Image 1 (cartoon, one colour):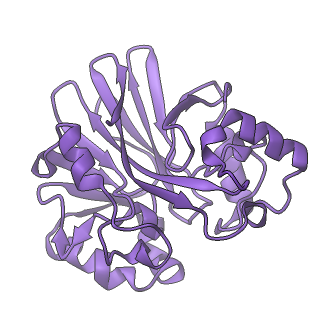
Image 2 (cartoon, rainbow, N blue to C red; image 1 turned 60 degrees about the vertical axis):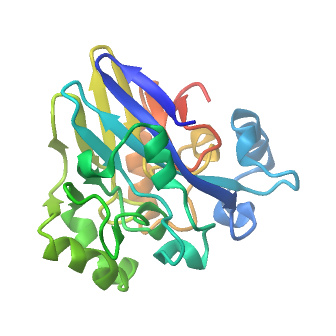
Length: 263
């Protein structure tokens, strides 16, 4: 069943679209990591390690239900069979079932925040037509402008249908969306990567996207991941956002929620 995190009158729900092994040895993904760092990461997040010592990924999205009932979805997972991620990720995903279990009607989603344009984060965004028919899809302009660098096939598969439906909104840096939700530009993993900070009362959750992808980047936030567009900028974004002991809602770690300073 989906996991919920209450923040005052706001609820953040983790939606699991699937999981499976990373497609290459995990040490290749973090070539500078030491044996001690791997040991500590495995202690922090044992569910991200397979029996043969390799990396197990989860593929998550998050639903944010505000006090007034409006629904925001952060990322759309790996997608159904034939989605762009199916060349490497374990499709079909199960987001449609997860939404039903969480009591979320796709037609009631008002905003879809795409943290970035990697295929495991946009899978259910467009399935022939926009899957969330009544939602504005939110993307950083820097990500939109980098699409040919990131994945030119997504122009026709994702951007053109969203623009035709007049559902795409481009942002420039940070935006306060409502009283509880702020979109924060966290570039580096991709040129226009963004995260979502949800705060209500004294509680806050940072929905990270791929600001970090493995607990080893909690052990040492300076560690670069192989598939970062700009490792130096990604490192700066990660270090800036992981200060302060925030609760993190993560896309790929073994557990959906955890404290940045307490994993």
